[in-house]
Length: 471
Ligand code: SF4
Image 1: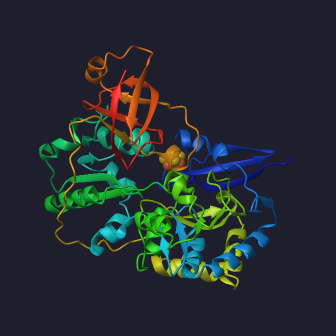
Image 2: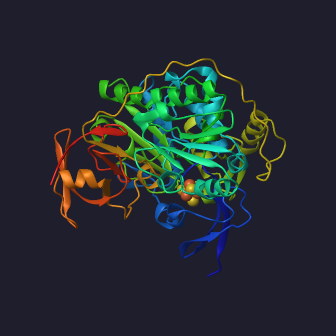
Image 3: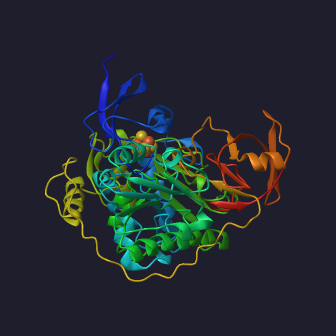
């Protein structure tokens, strides 16, 4: 059998790492050294892509069917639930599909993030990050993320900046080995910023908007630059395309499903299991999932088409770099055309995307020039972590995509382990929200009474969850 090789982009986060996917009976990953975002390097999620791309089958109520039939039945059910249908896309597909999706979703669009709670004049700053080359050239970098766990390919850029003399400050619950200065999030008053500082934070569906506002306000007051990393392959494209659309937040969507005002949910290339509680999903009359790979949520209808690496289209990475997907597939777009009731023309959508960005050709080696308008003063009231034990989720690609991960332990510090008289090699009991579980633990330089997890434990309420812990 001869190999099919696709030059594509990793769907694991919005960093925009280029790679090759090789098909030959099974899937393999090859390094693409010419890729400007990552120079061929991949994190362990990128190396796990064959697991991520588990094939999906089109289904109607559990019965396998051709994709076109699944799309037609979806169109019927969406039309039957007029006024009670919602459309969710987290930004895991091409700009061209997202534009088509937005045309269908005009009545109830949810991109997962809560732009509604943020000042409109900050949207552009949040949506489009700064070039990685600027990070490498920075004199002072302030991290509001754990780069090793969350966005591993940024580590190369940070080390390069450090080699050129940059100071790195981490504002995090755990000491980071590459940081020259480690400040705990509730000691933020110790943070000294200047015009030479670049703040790196992140923005995602579970972000605390007061914390996002706080980061924006710190940057504005110091005249520092700020860049928000994002967890989905085309988050930046999604936010650019939808910036003028009326959107609902994820919290609103969950509330509307619980109230019964939303009865049909159509999710495009989005594994919703990590975001919407299963008891909320069970209240839906119709859950329709359109995707290129298997999803862990139980859907009434699955519209299965080509995976991302086979698609024709473009993505925009965190720097604003426009990248072409290497495939020629348009089945996803065809399915959206069936739902819309008229076929979408790829070229028309593609030209419209280029016009929105202000480019005439797609060139991954040149970052388009984006307006970076100043934003006004911001009042923020981030909640400090209480001095009680708290479980903190360090969201990473494995959590967002509900993919099995070996990191099945929580991290805590030696003081906390000694206070609980934990035994080496033993487990820790964690209780919250009426649930209890036992986990392996690892001792790490973490804040007192904080447990860090890189795997969803199923008891969380947002990023920070108060817990009771014992041996
Ligand atoms: S850093 Fe993000 S885009 Fe790059 S390989 Fe890892 S998950 Fe994929």
